[in-house]
Image (cartoon, rainbow, N blue to C red; front, side, top):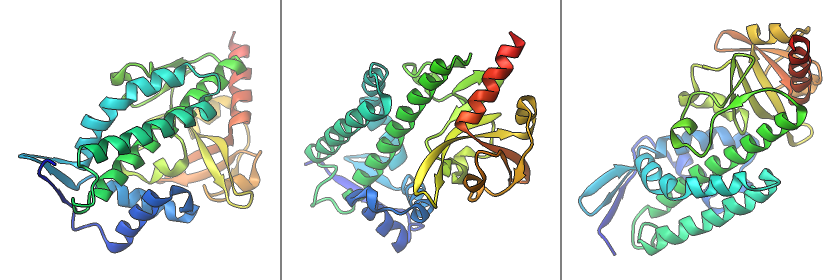
Length: 273
């Protein structure tokens, strides 16, 4: 076994560490209110370091250089070849997760003799799951837009440089991004918001399920037209299908259901045509 040493940042508190292990042991035990702490914990964990021989890198660097480069391209190629991206993509995602943990074990990077190696394994699994879920959702959304007859231009997922572009698609000269859930709003990397609209999912607490939505700037919504009702991001689902206006970072944003947004965009494109 190579000489491996892991150092965790002092900013990680006991609640952070417990949340990481809880996620690692069984992610489906995480309740919606706990996810904010999960995001915070794994963001801090990215600053942890792993020393392999004489080389020391952060967890974030390790994931980007060793995990994503090893698995991402093949996964996306297989995902794009599926008929049902969400369902079939989940099987592909789980297969890679198994191979990932097996590889870490075989290389001694996740081993009982290496102190805190479970946190490196959890970090890699967390970000892999986030990556795969995000692109499963994105591919499914792009196909829905095609089916709806909406004209758009999207980046090419098979090209790594395009995956890192600040937007995923362009519709009527407006820049859009596709995010798996609204939790992206709580991460520093997402701020300030750079796109005109975001296709994402909002958790409906009363119905206990996620609902596809679109978050738009006030100017972008003005092009699609329609009255709005004042709400918060947490209460927006309660007034759907009526469009909701929320305040985020001191700016007015409009939150609508994905279906309503598709209807308005298609109507506008047909009118212009």
